[in-house]
Each structure stands twice: as C-alpha cells, then as structure tokens.
Amino acid sequence: MEDVGELMRGIGAKAREAAAELAFAPSEAKRAALEAAAEVVLARQDAIIAANAEDLAYGRDKGLSPSMMDRLMLDAGRIGGIVEGLRAIAAQADPVGRILAEWDRPTGLHIQRVATPLGVVGVIYESRPNVTADAGALCLKAGNAVILRGGSESFHSSAAIHACMVEGLRQAGLPEAAIQLVPTRDRAAVSAMLQAVEHIDVIVPRGGKGLVGLVQKEARVPVFAHLEGICHVYADGDADLEKARRVVINAKTRRTGICGSAECLLIDRAFYARHGAVLIEDLLAKGVEVRAEGELARVPGTVPAKPEDFGREFLDMIIAAKLVDGVDEAIAHIRRHGSSHTESILTENDATAARFFQRLDSAILMRNASTQFADGGEFGMGAEIGIATGKMHARGPVGAEQLTSFKYLVTGDGTCRA
Image 1 (cartoon, rainbow, N blue to C red):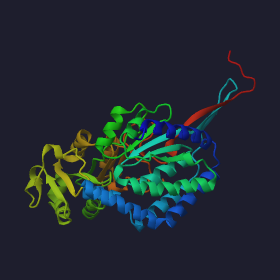
Image 2 (image 1 turned 60 degrees about the vertical axis):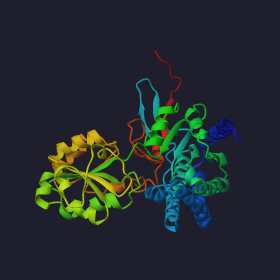
Image 3 (image 1 turned 30 degrees about the vertical axis):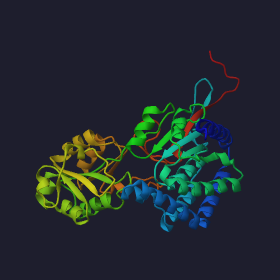
C-alpha cells in the first residue's frame, strides 16, 4: 500500500531543493524552459487529447455536471490556448530581481526593496487540466518551485501536460523537480500538502467552495484564497440598452462553468421602467433559467427565486435576478451576497460608475464590460494561477508578479548606528 505521507515528504524535499536553485536561475533559462514546453505540448497534442478522453469517461461515470465536463474537456483549440499562454508567460519580463523601491538615509545607508521568489508553491485544483501548465509556468517564471495536485477527474490529462513541462525544464537545464505533479488520486495527499509547513510556503486552492473551505479550515501553510465567483452585473438607470444587452448575455452564457460567469443580474427600476424586461427576455431566449424576485417573477418564463438563490454560484445556465432602487441598493445587495470576486456596472453616468467603484471592494470592478474578462490572460498576464479574493499579499488575477515577495538590500560604508 502506498505511503502517501512518505511520498509527499519526498516531493516536498525535492521542491525545496529546486526552489533554492530557481531563486537565482537566469531569466534566459526560465524563458527557454517555457518556450520548449510550449513546443512539446504542441507536438504531443494528440496524446494529450487521448489522455483527456480517459478523464472525460471517468467524469461521465462520476456524474459530473455539464459545466464541470466543459471545464475538464480539452480540444485542439484549448491546447492551442495552453501553448499561447506558455509563450506569453515566457515572453514576459522576469519579475525576480526587480527593484521595487530604493532610497538613501541620513545615516549613509542605501536601501533597496527587491522582488524575490516565494519559494515553494502548492497548487490544489479541480477539473481544469490547463491549470497544470498555467500554474507551472507562472511559478517557474517567478522563480518558485511548485507542487501540483490536480483533481482526480483530470488525472491523465494533467499527467500528460506535466510531462511536457518537465521536458521543457530538462531542455533548459533547470531542475526537473521545479514542477512536480502529485502522482496519486489519494485525498491524503491534499491533507499532507496543507500541513507541510517545512516544505511549502503558500497554498493556492483553485476549485469550488468545498475545496477552498477545506483548504482554509485545515491549512497550516498560508493560503491565497480564491473563493466562489459570485459575480454581479448591475444595469443602471443610465445604461445604454444595446451595450447592456450584449454584456449581460456574454457575462452569463459565454462559459457558465468559469468563476467569472455572472450569477446575479440587478436591474435598476429606472432601467426597467424605460426598457421593460428585455434583459430577462434575452436570457430566457438563450436558454438561461432566470430565478427572479418580486416584480420580475411575473415575467413569463421566469422561475420564482428563493432567498438562497442570491449569493449562490450556479456555474450553470442559471441566474438570479431582482430589481433595485438605484446604485446604493445595488451596492448593498452585492456587499451582502457577493464573494468579493468581480462586479460590473452598466452605465453611461460617470458619477454613478465612480460611486460603484469607490464603495465596493471586490477584487475586480468593471464598467460596461463582461465579467467573463476576469481572467489573468485577459489582463495581459499570459495566464493566472487563480483569482485571489482575499486582501493579503495578492488580489485579483494572480500572475507571475504576484507570486513574488521581496527582501531589503542595505548597503553602507563601514556605517555604524549611534
């Protein structure tokens, strides 16, 4: 029988050793590793898709929802996206060694604050096998070793992608233990990672509420929290109708299984008085189940909302909807039911938009744009390791730059303190 504890201690020790070397790895080597990995992914596309077919069969047998199956599925287009992401991260400036600030003191000291790697990052994720490449690449770019623990349903796909990442490291002459994938479905591996304070510097959970809750409850290692994506779209009284119609449909239906999918539509009464139920009708026409409250529940085709439908991440063709009296009521609703992920206001009124931006504290706030843009790739980061909804260290899309810390370099000239 496999000793998971011993397995994880071995992985952790190798990661710690690799991190020490990566901390001063040349930018050119990291870039070469990622460029080589991208080429290997492209060359092994058929093998990755074949591995993914095994995972899809496993997912069907487990009864995964359509949205979870969509997260799991890889095709030529999505593998092309992985390749593009690897190349984009490779091309970015090295975040390690950046001088964040520097100053002189009257004592004669010169002080610099310089970006440094975090060390070893543990990433625990569900379903989406592309996270194997995204997280591996971002951690490497930031000079971190990474331990990846993918979901049981993406076991074969993640292994196939991980092999490509290791080949990139090998070709660039970097330690292969810089990117390790936990080679077991045993859940005990997750518990071992959460307790591994001697080997792991930070844990990044990427998955549903159950996973993140477990991590936050049991982790002794610091956590970059990525809670639910309970994203709101607020159609203000001064919204442009055609813009609003486009954004609402895209925010909900483009991909329902991602954390940036809109889960609640708030409609200002002034908008409703002017334009009627057009936004609701558009959603219904696209096959969305609209769980509506109050007056909106009288719109034909809607389903009466229950209290628990607000503040719920559906990850499906379902959205909650209600009328609000002005931007302040919308803000109050979001504060009460949101998860501090992403909110969008649809308005042509600059003052109203400014109030929305100023008085809400979600990680991402948008104006006249779809919440589906809540993505590190769309922010120019190449990819992301997750959307951090907490307030410590990193917030919003976590890219390579957010996977660094800093140290102070202090230079004197025989300088002594009085």
